Image 1 (spheres, rainbow, N blue to C red):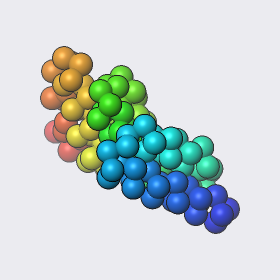
Image 2: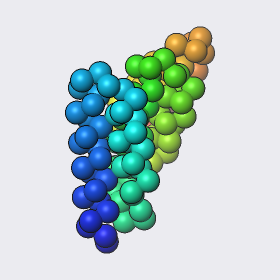
Image 3: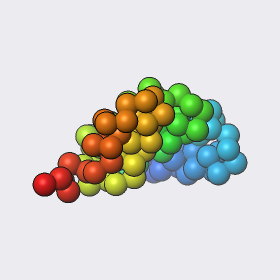
Amino acid sequence: MDINKISSSEEEKTKGNECFSNQEYKFAIDHYTKAIKLSNSSTPSFSLSIYYNNRSTSYYHLKEYDKSIKDAEKSISLNQTFKKAYYRLALALFETNLFKKAKKSYTPKYERV
């Protein structure tokens, strides 16, 4: 496990979170993208899922819904129990007028009966 890369990824995520808190969404996206690129096979999938979800949220705030959807779906593929990613996906789908798909995506697959 390369601790330096994981640490760098987390540092980039933290910088992204700071930018996000200041509503500097483009800069936040840059940091989350760096966190993703610094990740490797030893990065826990739940961490990578968070990076994608955070970037998805930033895209959402910039009204870049297609990119938000893509990152939310990637986040879900990495961690199928991450409820925030399902929520982000549903919001972005709703904004693109995909109402039925938004409603269906809001309930995580593992909770569907």
